[in-house]
Length: 257
Image 1: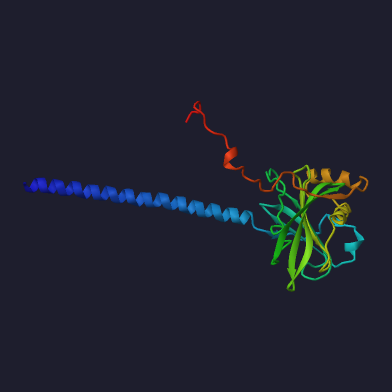
Image 2: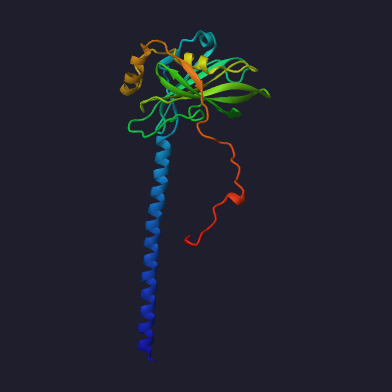
């Protein structure tokens, strides 16, 4: 091999290495831009869905005398995921006395949430609380529409407090309602009483959305209507005995394998 051939081979090798280096460098820039874009998208999403406290009073209240005599606290939070959530609480969950909390969520425009669109923890109704839902369910009827309730136990000072958790089944996506009610430690709340309490919901001012206001306000003027029924099992959950082999069908000559 001559010196000229050696120089040509070396030059080709150098060009290939330079080309590969350029490819690696621009590939690094390309993937770096993708990673940076994903990080920026995540930050923007988290920022848009952060929970913010709104300095305002809820547009609703409960007029049931069993709860209006209790200490009342209210809160309003807003996020891109849940929309606006207005909360009213009568009494304190962590004590052995009665109490009631209700949250009404007004989802953002275009939301495709379906009932139950409001979770008790997301609505900040069961923060830092040890609770268990039980197997007993109720269907409630109120002037505002159907509500579903389930028995629940909350641990307070080493003892279990019996409660009912509830969520709306309204025929609208403009709002969702959820909450809990508890009797004093050792007693069990009644589903009928809860239905009548929810029936005493009162709207004091314009709701955050026209659709929600158009749904709730006309129903507020309806006659009082509250009832509850225990949800019963609609299918047989018992085990069925297996028939003995003597009753099994026997294959015939026409049976195709």
